[in-house]
Amino acid sequence: MTSFDVVDSCLEYLASQPNPVQFIDVLAGVLFEQEEPELSPAAKVELWVTLCNNRDVLVITDKSDPDMIAYATQIRKSGAQALRDGQYDLQGYETSNAAGSTAGVASHHARFMRFVDSSRMFCSNTMRMKKMNLLLLESLVKSADRFRIVMAIASHRYKGEQWYDVWNVL
Image (cartoon, rainbow, N blue to C red; front, side, top):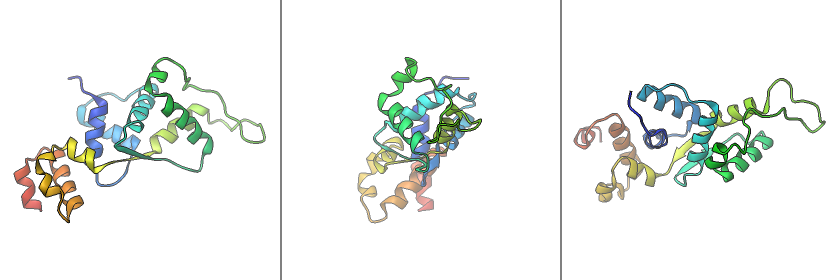
């Protein structure tokens, strides 16, 4: 088994997807392809924070839980280094609702992990072109059918096909 860069692999996976993908699906797809074991919850959150802080990645989260949005924003702004330094205990404490009672058996950690796993991610066309080495085809990607062409090339490149195989699809 060889070592691989999980962040770069996740970015490449996102670049090959035409629609937003849940973070858990991105991670599962990358780990499956690389035949790697599942990440620990702390490593998973660190990866999520790293991807969230990438300016070419759009993260879409569930707006129905303002506590989790605030907590995630606080962690994201502190960065992955704060997680490694132990500033945030992801095993967490029990949260309380407005009345002050415990929020059931779901811990803060479990709620946050569900929030992270269900967040959807999408990448910019700029990153897609960089990851799939499409910058050499600049005149091609400035045409009227730009997105369709870029996605056809990106999805086929991610599958390991060469650029001349893609022209048959277009």
